[in-house]
Image (tube, rainbow, N blue to C red; front, top):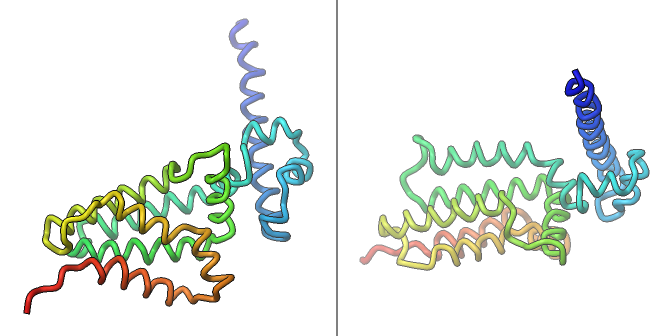
Length: 210
């Protein structure tokens, strides 16, 4: 009986925590939409959500974590869909063609979630975080490394350092660089993809001897 009584506050506490988290995310999404991520502070999110700063930071260390929570479902859907495109039963035989697909899809994802990705990327390079350690980044790195290994095995590209090449591609498709190219330099998404394809796909394919 005592155990049942003691469990009631714990369940209420868990429910309150879930409700606080959902309230924070709902308010953050609204503020990000109306005034932009850069113009929204963590303090404002907590105040508008009606939670204390300690509660806010207990759920999210920074805006990057809030942004990641907001697009978590989209990232999971991306991994499932693109994973099937590049590694499923119906995937095209050429590993480099599949790598091309992965880069195209990643750029489309970045373009459609650019402010959120930029905030995540900025937080990941802060003093409190280690860059290139997030689960999504690690998943992308593993896919690219695997595709390069397959391409080398099939003779589609010359032997190379697949892990380093994956790092180079991920640096090229990083949200902060993509945003700079799109917004500051005025590059079109088509220009960016064409340049990446020339450098990372066509540039690495081995040419057959005449």
